[in-house]
Image (cartoon, rainbow, N blue to C red):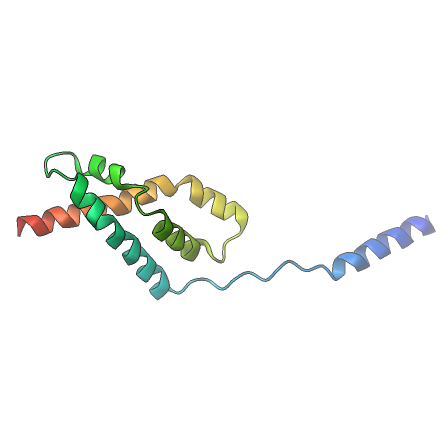
Length: 116
């Protein structure tokens, strides 16, 4: 029993020195907004190229998704910087919908500007 106690105390002492890496600070709202704007601005020429003004806006938006992977990764990093891996996996799972929603916003803004 004494040997077991020594092993447990030694193991706990070793774990006490191990601390998880500190989480990175959350990105500021200003940074997230700037990266969102960069991503959406990158989509503008792609949306202009694919939009005929007649097709369903969501279909056009879906065709632009993936057109700016570096800008999206910058946005993803800012949005999830302080999150743990589980949250990041959930976010990745839902990223297609988010990308389509952002692209849809771009298509609708372009169409509204064209009507004016």
